[in-house]
Image (cartoon, rainbow, N blue to C red; front, top):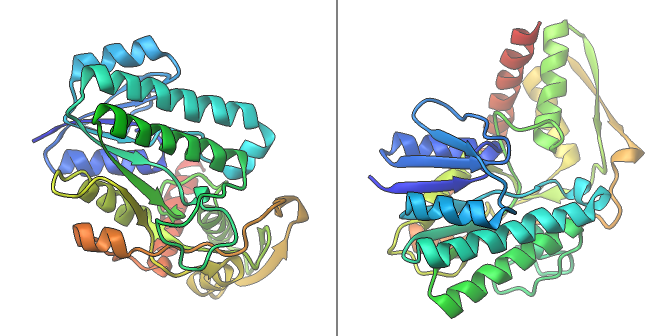
Amino acid sequence: MRRVLITGASGFAGRWLARACRDAGDEVLGVSRSGAGVGRGVSVRALDLRDARAVAELVAEVAPEVVYHLAALSHVGRSWQEPGQALEVNVLGAASLLEALRHGAPEARVVWVSSCEVYGPGHELPVSESAALKPASPYAVAKAAGEMLARVYRDAHGLHVVCARPFNHAGPGQRPVFLVSSLAHQGASARIAGQRQVRIVTGNPDTRRDFTDVRDVVDAYRRLAEPSVPVGVYNVSTGRSVSAAEQVALLAELIAPIEVEHVVDPERVRAHEVMDVRGAPDLVAEATGWRPRIPLRQTIADTIDWWERELSAVV
């Protein structure tokens, strides 16, 4: 059993990670700005990582053996609307946590969750960890800055930091502002309403992303927390990408016989869109033995089922 601290524990991946650590027998404390619970057996406290004193006090109190840093404003589109907030939350929060760890838990194993967005466009695909960083959004800039700061603390102060760069992940419990969950929400709503036809709305249908099920993603994080894994940077990805149009086609198969009309909403088409993103997963596979197990079709099916339960409970 290990003492585990998870920042961003009330978020999508954070909830799945907290439950996975609990089920493995770890003593888990989660923190988030809301302090919202994540399930039985996991304590969660409200904490704003920008409050450096509060973060330092908590780390000193808990003395974690493993830290998973997931807390962030995580939506690319929102970062264009509020760039200052994206930078403030994601970078200042990172600085507070690193300082607290330096003084209060210098021996902790730290899994620093960055993002594939730090790569930006123009790379040979699938992109490897050695590629130059070319962030193309305020969110990506903030994540790159946090990642570089973590590397500085690792090199200057000896913190045991391993950096995960997850590519897109999806699954039950995700907010519908993200594509897979949005599609599943629309499909589940059509099923509940008994519709014969449904208009499925997306942004650019040709953008391609590398999707991993969130349950596989948190498995990768837990493997990266093992002391035997060399510190460094690891993609968490499948090496394959799928377009928005192909995801709509998968949805149509899963909710048949409901007929699907795919509609592109110009308001959802982002400026400076990176058209194809996929990552090489070779390093994480070599270091940990991790490979994704759950196919995208199953992820979408499970997310539809989750939304049906959620929407039916509201009705």
